[in-house]
Length: 218
Length: 139
Image 1 (cartoon, each protein chain N blue to C red):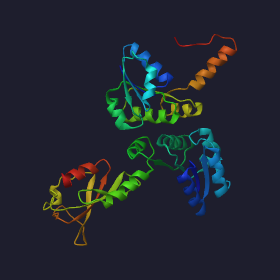
Image 2 (cartoon, rainbow over the protein chains, first blue to last red):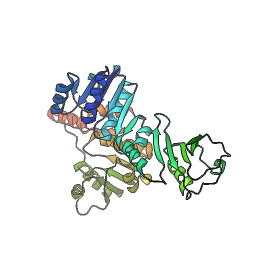
Image 3 (cartoon, chains in turn red, blue):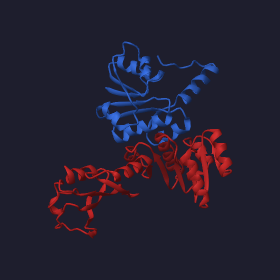
Image 4 (cartoon, helix red, strand yellow):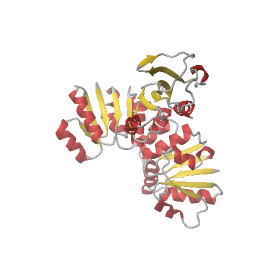
């Protein structure tokens, strides 16, 4: 695979290092000369000095034959432009953007970049798993379709305890995939009645996550 | 017309005053409150601290009722991102973006953004002046 890594900061550096170790062809594009030299010393002649948001730079970097362009600069707006120019001008098959502001995930998707990684979200997810009840914890975000696998544990206070799933009025883009009750999985039907202590694993979209929380906990 | 301007540099401040004097309702956004000093004491419009690449800030600024949006910060990429948010997400009818880099201007103009490149305009005007034809300046 030929990967172009835009941004030679810590993330770009370690990403490039891993990719090289896995045997891929990598080019790092970095604006600051000093940083370029540091990376070159450690990883060899795989750095190009330049601003990856400029089409001329992406062109020189061989974006037309790249399998993927990963934009990992520290600024979301730069990563957006890099990915858009790579996809629209150079027809890069895959463009992945790092985002810092979790809200940008939806914005980037609306602007045509649907592969984004938000370190903030990942850490939030880890933190939320440490929180007590009443939390809808995101377990996994699927790469396509904006689907999230979420988990919550019902207690007596939850208004849905004792009710059948068909009565919940779940939105169309949300489904309860499995319940874990007494350590046993239950694949529910509409008749299944929810009980206190049930660990609910649901599939939902990021837009519907809040509605699901309200239904299960409000 | 209700216009939101992102960036209170020299151009942003001048644009804001021109529009306000022309009778439009103007809101200027900047991430640095000192930038608003450029507007002058009798600027009749409003200012707000914040970055227009944040949808929460844009909503607070009233983007949903804005008739026009101009992105004139120093950063091409910030301008590009904010303009796309204004145009494609909030469907603001008139969106104008300043992009210094001629190649990026080209790419985004092809994608449907209305763009102004001071680099391109400036070079043309200077060339006119150097070669002897009268240089065009806006009133």
